[in-house]
Image 1 (tube, rainbow, N blue to C red):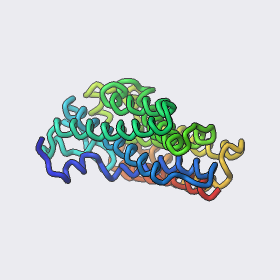
Image 2 (cartoon, rainbow, N blue to C red; image 1 turned 45 degrees about the horizontal axis):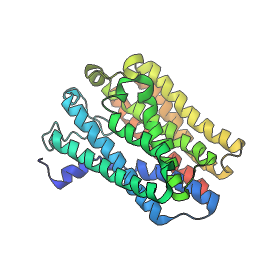
Image 3 (spheres, rainbow, N blue to C red; image 1 turned 135 degrees about the vertical axis):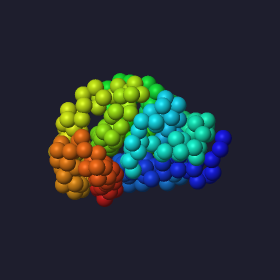
Length: 298
């Protein structure tokens, strides 16, 4: 297994792993809102498991993309197209597979720890989370609806409610509602990141929504999910399922609106689309962070 230590670190795509702490923070903030305290040790352990799970997805995705030949046709951007380490020969496919398996192993160890602490209730979100990691690239990307929903399910309900459960030992309707926000955002994040790869994905046999429907229709789907995200925050506050201060998350709406407008107008122009991918990442991270801050302050 060739590759320097820095290559293994880069293979996890560390610049994107910040998404995991942000999503976990929503779960922790939901606990703090209810109890006024959180177990920082358990939160740290949960973060290790969550980051390892995210790193496993990234490494296994690179492995499958490389052995399927997809990387030969992909145009790499700062936000899509994989790490580029395998096509460049800096890391072997076997090394990426082993790295992904090792990261998944860390996640499983953390999961077993919390199963001992809190019992089998964790399996309601833990088992689907593991299946998403293992099945995403090879199988889930062949199903338009599953491919759209799976990222949001993993980083929304699975990660947010998983964090809530390991800190609280139970589940909660309010936390479930809060988990929808990062869920919608991350599904949209992956949807938009597929735009530069549409031809490569089609050649490799993927059958996600973008391949099936094309850029123009999926731009409308992207816009609808983004609007649904912000509408969900307002409705949750109106129904008193979340506190008023989570409306802080609406501060990112102007950036989201500009991004939506850009995607609707320029979804087939790669040079114009790349800055939009960056804006999408920015409000996908900022919105759940502000949501968590609202919960902490409440």
